[in-house]
Length: 144
Image 1 (tube, one colour):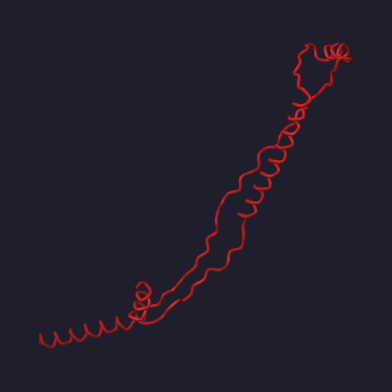
Image 2 (cartoon, helix red, strand yellow):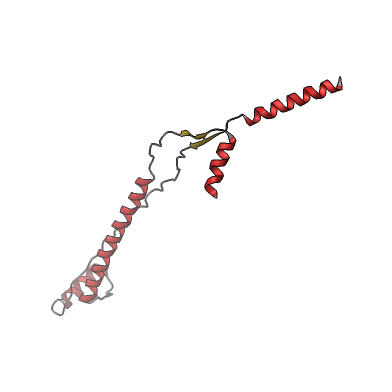
């Protein structure tokens, strides 16, 4: 009886090994689209522009200006700026305005690019089907 049992086990083992070699593997490429989650930060508070007054004073109106200024403001304090430096200040302000406008455009561009967009559907594609030896030959023949 032990010989018969050995023969049956040998037949079962051989048939199971043959069944494994007949399984045809498949190479499947699966694409899953993932939605990016980048939070959009709120815009900063706007700039508050406080009133600033400039007085044009020269030799002809200096006495009149000093009297009026002292009556309106009390103390007399001067911050003087020459005409060329005032032009430089004006050019600097214009350049700041340009820079802020370009930064705002850049921020809007990136906010639009990360805004929610519809993702394509996930895909799955069989690239190659066949026996294991065919696939191994195909894979290893390209690496030589």
